[in-house]
Structure formats: C-alpha cells, structure tokens
Length: 108
Image 1 (tube, rainbow, N blue to C red):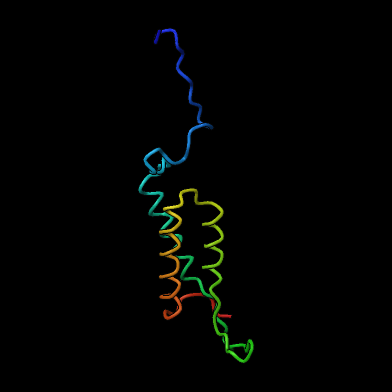
Image 2 (image 1 turned 90 degrees about the vertical axis):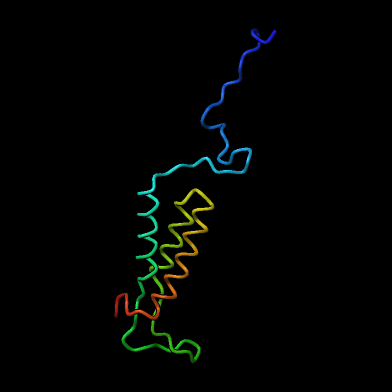
C-alpha cells in the first residue's frame, strides 16, 4: 500500500520561513552578516550637526540623527530575518547614543 501512495512535493514557495521547531530557515554567510553590522555602525554614527543650534519649542537642537533614521528604514525594508533585525536595531541604538557624544557626522 505504501508503494502506491505518492509523496507530496514541497515547492520552495510552500516552504515556511520558520521550521516546526521555531528556528528560522534563512541562511547567510558570516561575511555578509559582519558587513551588515559595519554598515549599521556607520549609519548610526552619521549625525547632521548644526554650527548654530536652532530653537524648536524653546529647546535648542544642535544635531539630528539622519543616518540612524535612514538605516532604521532600510533595516525594516530589507532585512528578512526578525532575529537579525532585532540585533541590528539594538546595535543601531547603542551606536547612535555613542555617536552623539563623539564628534562624528556632518557639520552644516
């Protein structure tokens, strides 16, 4: 009886991204992952600094994290693995905070 029963084919579009055990099936090399981390780090360090601070609701604003916002949007748009996205967001927040105190960025 078992010989007559045909095995159901599994096509790539039908395969789930998450396995039955909850592990993600996406695979990328270590070099690609390190490159993404380096790009997120550089994006977090990109601040647009103003030579003369402007007042917004009586609060002086002297810098704007433009690189962090662009990097966060790119991560949300391009990164498929949720676990990697969470790590990248955490790295981005830490590097952005450090980048505020380091004189890194563009002065306008």
